[in-house]
Amino acid sequence: MPKVTFRAPDGDRTLDVPPGTPLMQAAVDDAIDGIVGECGGNAMCATCHVYVPADAADDFPPMSEAEDEMLNCTASERRPTSRLSCQLPAPVHDLLVELPDEQ
Image (cartoon, rainbow, N blue to C red; front, top):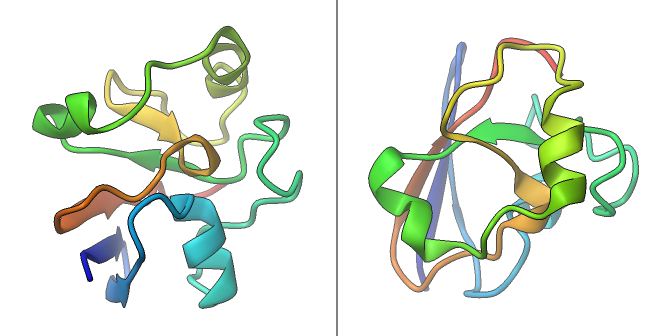
């Protein structure tokens, strides 16, 4: 099973995440600090903002218009690699995502 590492300012947490599972859901289920997921995965709150590696962009579906709009509302800086983890199914290989300082 692929491992997803959530890199936070206070350290890393690594989870076994079945491919296809939304990263936000895996993080919330395992109480990862820094992923809130207030809207339950509907791309309506931006409280599951993460930074994905630039070379991992092809591992995920293209960004929807709704996700793009929500990323303009993040508490932390929006970067070119910003995504909402509720819109990212876990890939079939290991992955590292960085958490912002605040949601």
